[in-house]
Length: 454
Figure 1: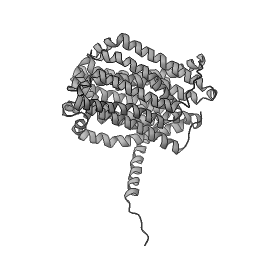
Figure 2 (figure 1 turned 30 degrees about the horizontal axis):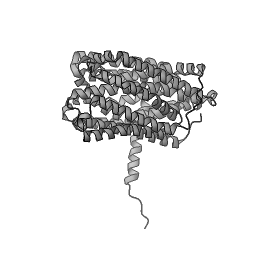
Figure 3 (figure 1 turned 180 degrees about the vertical axis):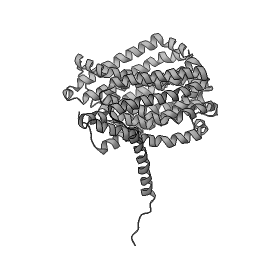
Figure 4 (figure 1 turned 45 degrees about the vertical axis):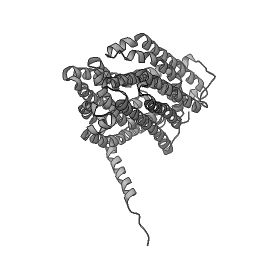
């Protein structure tokens, strides 16, 4: 596959990836505000809905990682230039096998998991979620196929339709009959909006979708062996990001989940630049590794992480100073108990870009196994310290545990990055300073009065 080069690639790809991420966050935030302030009468209902979304978002995130990286990697291999239908077929088979596994777990073990989380109300949602998983099969396949061909604009349209339709239906039903907005009906609305997204992505994928499926056992096994560590890594990473909600539900109640979910929503907004850059950086790192070597990969990492930190640092400080303002806007005063949680974790948000870029960098340079073990250890630290925190410090303990595990995970990842590609913390923060300098000069150009010739 011929990869696009130059600044136009970065501008176009990052623009639509960021636009997609920001639209997802915007739709999600507006939906959350409506549900928290107008629909759910108690914090507990929000906690149940938050757990449901966290679990199915985790399923989708894990599967995207399983499918995306192998397809992008193998489509760039010279030996598959004339055999891309083999790659597509292998990816689709993997997609369906994973979905069958998830459906089996939901059908036979959903009630056990719901009881373990102290929320039996989740079980009917799990059974309904089986249809969600089925619709995800074509959605994820089309999305990964478009991403492999750098069609980020088409992906944006698909997600915009998916999230926008859910928000629109939420508003319409709220105006017509608020009592109809039960947890079960909300899940049905999510499935219908996902189906709409499938139709949009199918339209844009038609020129890349091979209908003459060609099953090749060798290709399937090669992609599986390449993706098995990435698959495990995505499981650990996704479970780690939802650790506070799962552990607090299991040890305390769904009410506490609602407080941690508010903080999670704010963190998700803070993570948009990191995730968007990671989506674009993986194929560029694959290309850089093949053509320019480690030096270019190191430069991309240091420059991108430095730029993201320069954006996050002032925002984190503002949120720390006026946390009540942000929680009031997002959920209302009944969620003020989340304020100390937010203040505890927000000042360490600058560490998160390292973890996002660490994974894509390790996979791109052919070290998925290292990425696997590092993320397994990071997830273990996260759950371990959160569990201890909740046991010894009560409902605030998960926040303390999150901070400790974040610092230890950062130190571990930085050590690996330093040894593998030579990443330097000093260089990363140099780019933080350069970013502020570039912003300063940009403002000067905007506000500097133009010289007028007499």
